[in-house]
Length: 112
Image 1: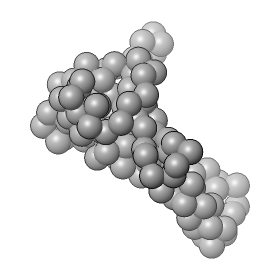
Image 2: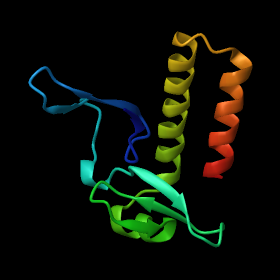
Image 3: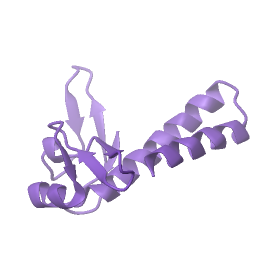
């Protein structure tokens, strides 16, 4: 998983070690439970909720108050990584670039 450190703005990578433990790159200066893991829109389609590593949903302002950083840039980096993974998978399955871009467009519309 790729993220952006909210403290310093550096990109970082979270990997699994051969032992199965989760390993963070040395540039990470954040509590992993504070890392946003997801986002969703409320039924009103105007309110976005962010989910932290402890699976607590909260509005952007509340997230900033609790964890001390804005989750939006981190989620943007995560979503770019996810799109990249979809592109890699689709190309390995022989899908055309047009089909892939259509999938990405549909994913982007659902998130917005």
